[in-house]
Length: 118
Image (cartoon, rainbow, N blue to C red; front, side, top):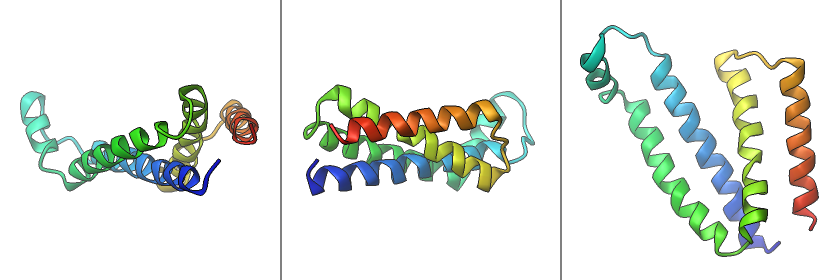
């Protein structure tokens, strides 16, 4: 892989993870309202908008990344996002990582490593 491909891939992982974490932070805030009022209140939370901005930026990065790698490789490398998000969720939101989730993380990481060396 070229240096540009690796940079785009790493930026994609960082921005996608940041977006997911921002959405989780917004969703974790207490729900003081019901129904439509809840969603109107949700749209006022800065975390939501940070998540949206991250997703727009991630979309552009993903398209640029896909111009450099085959889709089958890109999707496999993109799956490392799952691993990073799960680990970040563990540390930032105290979410549990069961034995099976840890095994899944290791399998995904192995798959990404194999595809990365292709």
